[in-house]
Image 1 (cartoon, helix red, strand yellow):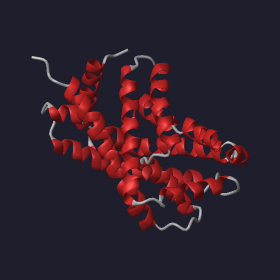
Image 2 (cartoon, one colour):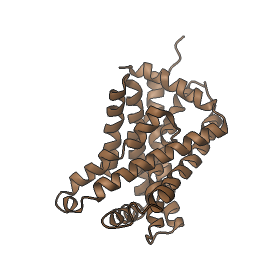
Image 3 (cartoon, helix red, strand yellow):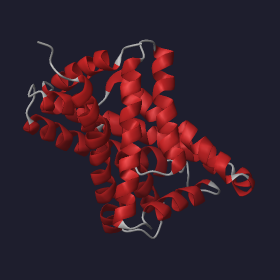
Amino acid sequence: MNSPSEGIKIVNEIALNKEGYSISKTLILAFLAGAYVAFGGLLAIIISGGSPGLAANNPGFTRFLFGAAFPLGLILVVLVGAELFTGNNAYFIPNILTKRQKCHAMFKNWSLVYLGNFFGAICIAFVVTHLTHLVSSEPYVNTVYSIAYSKTSHSFFITFIKGIGANWLVCLALWQGIAAKHTIGKIFAIWLPVMAFVTMGFEHSIANMYFIPLAIFEGADISWSTFILKNLIPATMGNIVGGVLFVGLPYGYLFGKIEA
């Protein structure tokens, strides 16, 4: 296992490599990450949403099943390589603290990756899920509606706080994945925190780029402006705070100092 100090060195190299990507490479990798996260969301809907009897009698276990399936996306991002906005919220911070990278490099990456993630998630929502009618019938469509209505029913502040919790755990999952040296260890290290944040009902902006538009495509009474204003903006802001303030900054400060 890599120690925290060794892990930060790996994070630093990852961030430097990301800065060197061309715009086209960044966008393609970001599109793929958005699609991978969406596939995880679709799997979670199929497994959890297909168990209405279990949900009625044991809702906690159904939420666990949903959370247990969802990490497929982040596992794919790490193992096959892709650009995920929420993970990148933390990756650049240690290098910025030691002035190895400039803030503009981070913001450029975040902007391109966020855009690519959005189109990847929307593609899976509309083309792969909606047009193929995978969730258009009962009981799946009720699950799709329930997820979207719940995510757009909270205040800005609550969604913001839930966004912090989500990306705090997502970035810890990535840090744990870096600590592990073997594939099975990486998979489990990523799976556990992601399963936890989904089961607990936190808000991940990239996942919500799939869940809520899918509900809109399936006929839910939710507007695009409601999606953006009630969920996407506060969730994104919370994700940034969770990744930067609670993972990138403390671990960069504690373990990221350049040795003389």
